[in-house]
Image (tube, rainbow, N blue to C red; front, side, top):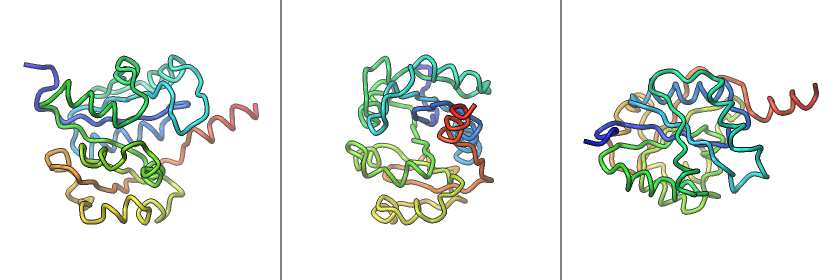
Length: 193
């Protein structure tokens, strides 16, 4: 028996530059609202849509400094597999863990940008997606190109606890109490010190 057989695992990817309480809020929402067994924090060695990032190790450190609770762990899969794109990572983790139910977690700001991602339609066809609202997003993510194209596959927030059991494409938009922290604001505050 494999370690993660028949579990539901949230893949929570990002640059985490730096990781902060807002990221933890998204991860906790995945555990609570989607009913996941575990969350894997997937720190991207280099996000292809962003300028050069600080070192991988320094960003991993900021995740650990949050004090990850039980059922959350840092995964080095993207680094270990040598993948740069989310779709390549998803293909690899699914191949390595064929009986695990993966759900992709993302903030609503990233959902609005999803059509810019490599093979984004295959991502949607491979894994259910839980989108967590972010402060200041308003209706923009829910009216985005991805939301319009995937409207027929949207699961209500009240049904989000069954998301990991459904065959993709399927997604839900969660609106928990919001946490206003952002990596951009934290970097600006550090730069102004």
